[in-house]
Image 1: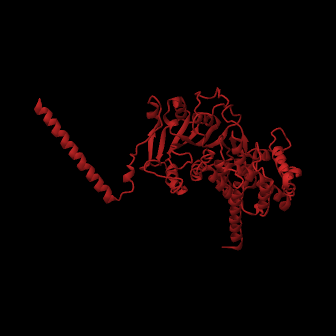
Image 2: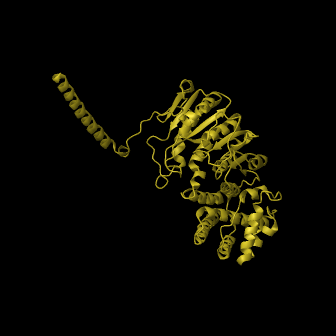
Image 3: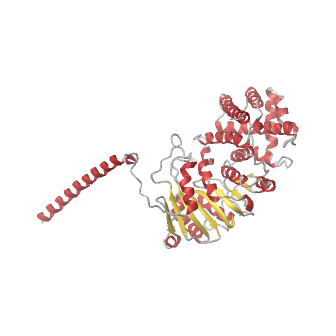
Length: 475
């Protein structure tokens, strides 16, 4: 290990430790984990912006009045007042002088640290380190770790915004976005921007061309979410991963209006369940079906968002495959799109318990001929505690996706046969679930179990035959 590598590792470990020390400090004031992340995000951005000015002679993204140096020079009530003024100013949607990236990170920012002594302690702890000294991927990994931890918080419901990163990685590898083709990518329900960040990582490794890399950062990725908290987390997550385009993430409701731009690629894990009560009613002429079902609406939106020849990888729950409300949507998906692959996912990989989901892969412009279904559900057991999903678990699927050859878990279905049915159901399954008690048996134990069950069935058959003979003789 070189000195530089060792130094980088030490820095990452130091900052990672610092992040959790800060969490402990704020929890002492009764601040929940979600609020901790937002306050850390605001303060960390101010600190890193100051470092860019001090160490790299860059122009600050914010006015000097609200800079990190100005804030850390204060204490007591003056510090609290300045912090709250800073948040109010940088989050003002009507202030056109504020950098759009700053606006996104500080979307609806509110102070949750109401005791000056705690705020001062957090600022001092953040100020002890140079946060730009660590590489983007490592810095991003620390923040991703915080987001994943937040996803485990059942009270806040933050798990709905966090898609397992191994699953995202496999989907992006299959879609294979191409920087040289200048492909554009959108996630209309971006959560913490996992899909966009993985697509960025995938594409930046394809070239060393400065202009293409600049375009990747500024004009390739787009994320939309209707929750202010999530926009803050997604924007900061992108920033820490080196994506600093001002309008990469926007706070908006993707479903209420027709898009004015189409994209080459859509990557998404839309929110499951019904549309939240009180939301603006969806009245879209470009939608096939009017419904309150969130995922069916997002599927329709994704179909509209795709340019001709565009492709999508979308996580959707089981009911999309068979629910009667989605019948016409499925028909259009089969006739106007090439729905070439479905990945059936097991439970236990999402923070929302019991979720049964699939990944639909489709392209716009040509009808579906065959659908390949990969069953990664039957006989598969994952838990968030002891057997988390890993990227290697999906290697076989990615290989099958690329080779298009049937295996035990990868089966081909004819779209013509599905279109001949009444409901166009895509709930395609063929593998038989093994009894849970038998899953961990050795071959010897399994054979003994089969023999015992055969004996039991033989006894039942003999008993039934005896009863039938008795009835015949009675007559």
